[in-house]
Length: 500
Image 1 (spheres, rainbow, N blue to C red):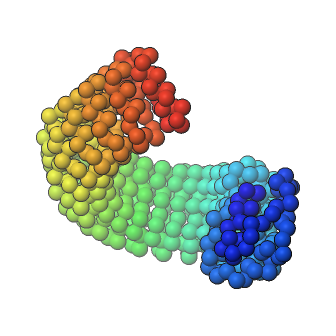
Image 2 (image 1 turned 60 degrees about the vertical axis):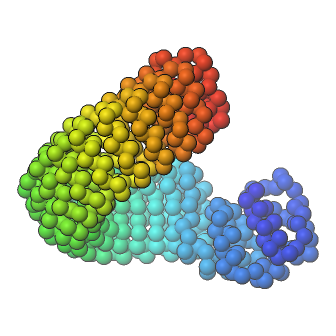
Image 3 (image 1 turned 45 degrees about the vertical axis):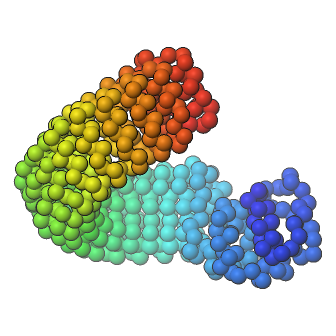
């Protein structure tokens, strides 16, 4: 109701009219508020530019837009023709029956019903009547195969998100009737190989997400028929090398997430044929140095994730040939200092995660050459205070993860030179009060984690004076006493998320 009144007031001021007088502040929320005056808005809406009105109305919640629509015929035509065909109606966390009842006769082409809490048969029937929809998001609502059957009646859909719905092969077969789809997200269901076979009939798809669906190599082979795909997420399945080989036929792919799929070097060799790839995620597989060498042929890549594989310094050297990379995640491998030195040749990198890689001070020194970095994660390595100074040369950093190392107070003093930091994570680094006081110079910090260090009352007090904080973790700093806790409690009272 307040948003609706604000709309009336704003529009009235733009029109140069006097302030509207509302009949009551306790009116029924199901009806728009009444107002007194000489045709305050009804006769004068058309004097404002349509683009300006659309901009104002688009800032309202969907139910308030419905109320504005009822004010006049002019507003109805404006919203129906110029706003709703280009805007998604969003109903979050509501009972589905109520949400559908609100919009069932309105000309939305895009509908977002995320996390609505019930899917009764009546609601599903109403939903299937919204035949004008082009885009529908019903993720996180347990509709099952029955709901998929109802959705299959919406033959005008081009984009559909039915993630986490308990949909099995039967539901996938029903959805395969939606032959106009170009984008489908069905992650977190149970379609298996038979469901993948059914979806392979959707020849118009360019974007498909089948993450976590119990798909094996047979299902991957079926999906390889979708030769128009440019984006595919098939992570967290069990397609193996045979499945990777089948997917290598999808030569139009520019984005592929094939993480956690039991893929080895043989499968990676097959993927190296996908030369149009710009983004590739192959983390949590069984890729070694030979696989990394195969990936180095994908010279168009700008974003690569190979975390949690079996890559050593030889593989890192191969990856260093991918000079177009701007984002690289090579965490949870074993590249060591020699591997870090090899990757320091990737001077276009802006985002690097090299955590858990047996990197010590020489590796940290090499990484200081990557002066274009804005985000760096070197946590869980063996970096000491002497080479925290090397990291302080990366003056473009806004986010730094250096937890579970050995930088101490001297290292914290060096990191305090990184004036552009907004997020810093230095948990378990033997930092005491002097280090905490040094870090308090980073006045732009919003997120700071100094948990499991040696900070006492003086350090806690210093950190509590950081002016921009929204999150602070000082848990497991057992030397913080009552005085420090009092200062930290003041932050909590200001609405800052503090853990201690």
